[in-house]
Image (cartoon, rainbow, N blue to C red; front, top):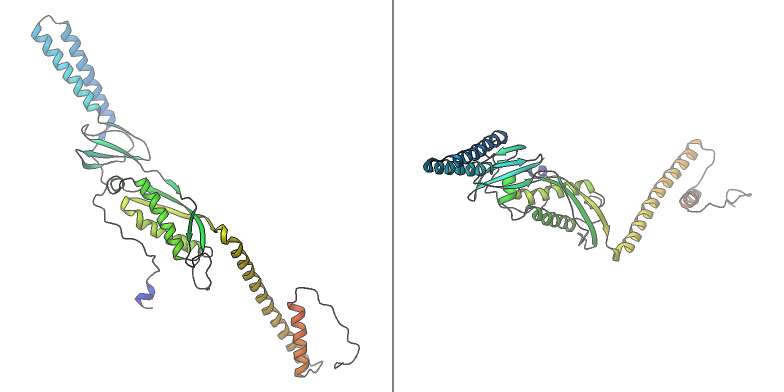
Length: 312
């Protein structure tokens, strides 16, 4: 097998720009210890202010109150770095506009309070497109819809590579469904061609490959994609139904004829082998004609009893 023949049938997928930033783990510590130290600092600051208020010495009083206020403010500021991270969520950390990592560990975590933290859900999500009306490969108007199961794999790409990753996934899913629909016919006229209705699994795999190529730049992983609606448009549905029915009738008739020919061949072979009656070519042709009429007819045959000789 040549190298060209071994190459799989890869759909024509768009080329997205490479990611400029990748996710890495942000530096953080356990939030329990940070919360305890912050509360201790706050209580100590309040205590210093209360103690300074009781002093009679002006210098000592002002010093304790100032130190207490500064300590309390510092404790409150430090506790601003606490984050509650739920399972299935992440925090994208930025410091003065620079990406400083992602917190994925759930629970109470503490980071630099000067940073900003953006919540990104990493849970599995569903997106179902509306019913789209497009023309298939033969130019027939069809209606189709799809559902995509996806999740955010790289929070940095989802945050910084696209403007809104939710809208991005929605738009790219619709574009991929439309592109797949125009690449393949609803029903293939030739037996070797792929069709949307007859090769659902193969078409679904191609849709998944194209979706992956389209949303990979946003750090999104496609878990599964399926067509949920596939039908001819109402204006041609009746005509296409008649065409499908005609095709089914032709296929059924072909099967009946093939079976009838085999039965006639078997009957002639047995008559010849047993040699209980001699038939010339004309009588064989008449017998074949009668048997085919009986076997292929859609109504019950009316038998004719011959009371004369074989040739009357």
